[in-house]
Length: 270
Image (cartoon, rainbow, N blue to C red):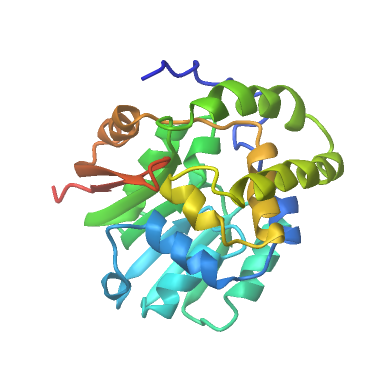
């Protein structure tokens, strides 16, 4: 396995890139059936029945699509947090049908709740933060004793070309350009991916999954990979170590689509 590059230094904000993702969520706010399939993959081993009657926290909720699915499965209540006003406005629209939802303007670093939630999860957020350990500490704090903490992280395995080719372009160019320019540049990059997927770019499960996505859906994915100031790619051992440092127990890391890690752990009962 190739060695990962050293962790990135935060070039401007401890919170990552909330205003850049706010632009993305404001432009790609539709809720699609494919999003449920992705959610189910990212939150394995949880099944729909595991959410029933539970109180959960979605830390970094975006436009609310990952909050939507557990509520539709019968979750009792939830708190969903994010920090960009455009993002939160879209989340309120997405979740308008669920009165048991509380949407807060709140950073993951500032979660005040203690021993409050059966399930605490953060999908696609922690790998964009300057201080992942501080984020995990807050997620653990918010979970009830014995509660589940789940985080989905970019994986280093099978992403060598992303780490060593695309990621430097993202860090040195795309993350510094105005968002309108990056959004325009996402068109030709998406076209390349779209064409490559037609004959079958790879047998990896992830590429089989996205092969059926619309061009617009693929563009949203490409654009989201272009805009962040920080993007870390975790090996399995690094993902597990992140949870171990937080003091979580029963830690498991599942190789999602053979390109990312869904990591789960329990808050100790003591």
